[in-house]
Image 1 (tube, helix red, strand yellow):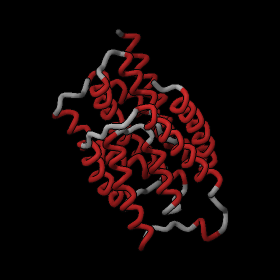
Image 2 (cartoon, one colour; image 1 turned 30 degrees about the horizontal axis):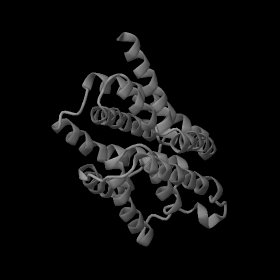
Image 3 (tube, rainbow, N blue to C red; image 1 turned 60 degrees about the horizontal axis):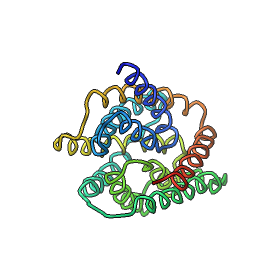
Image 4 (cartoon, rainbow, N blue to C red; image 1 turned 90 degrees about the vertical axis):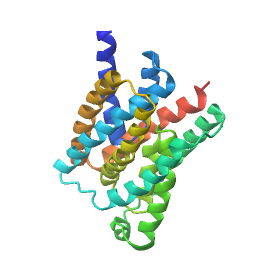
Length: 250
């Protein structure tokens, strides 16, 4: 049992880095929790505890490096929360293998846009944070929230696409915003899972400790290394997860 808990904490640490620099860490933690004997629904709820605590600690890491996400994290966080509450209540029947293939395609499209469509013209360096661009993102985050509430894995990639593509935030700032927005709507997800007795607190808190440590160091490291590091990490993670989703699903 002790070895399992140590392994869980290590997986949490790795996942904290993955979630902070790119996204999709839940594709690693959920199978691990199920392997340890938790039913899928309990594994999902337990994983949300780790995500919530990681979000709090990682946000502190970004703030310690001078990255401020206010007020946009609030705008987008409220919109995503409304969507997440709806998404958590939805009972949508979809073939699992087909859904995974769709997600794989989405992730490849997202990383291709982030890496190859980021131009260096002066006008592209100016953040678009008011008017129609603000409202477009608020609306899109409602739908991102639905996805996040329904199935957490991979939601970070969709957030990065909106924040970088619509609002032209740097990838470092987009990651900081992603963390705060995820934390806001995850509060409500945790409440829903708690009410329905779908959380294993021992596993959740151990996983959360690893997530928090990985997220703290990754957040501070990514700020010092800049967008180049984030892009490299995004490419590697998307390729690995897209291949896994496309070819290695039931």
